[in-house]
Image (cartoon, rainbow, N blue to C red):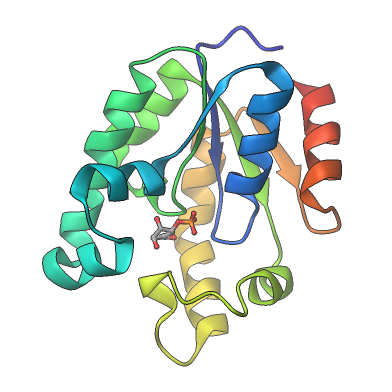
Length: 169
Ligand code: S3P
């Protein structure tokens, strides 16, 4: 396994960061943290409620602060939120404190995997395809900037993706 202090998963919504991250941690005997769940636990509010009360700006500040604390630790597998790479400080900390894997997914697969999801405020409107396409356009260079490794999850269920990815680490 790679000697970096932490393993950090980045990538868009629906890429499989949480499901693969949890399994990878189990396989390597590391602790798993889903950054979004950690933000909710610390705030005592759901992500949609945080967006509603504090806007995306408030959420991003919480996200950057939470990641800074998590990445200061060792031996974690961290599933980040899709927009965590927007913060330059977070990107630097990811690179300094982790081996960063960019989980890639096509728009079609994102739509399929997120079809029944109502927990993502950025997808609350009607045109999910358009939103997801625009987010990927903006963020693709940021994922590329931080990634040590890219891994395509399109045609794999989480157990197989985990197994294949584990062999590359
Ligand atoms: C977001 C992705 C979500 C969550 C929030 C915002 C984004 O995490 O952090 O809804 O900006 O792409 P997942 O990538 O785990 O869905």
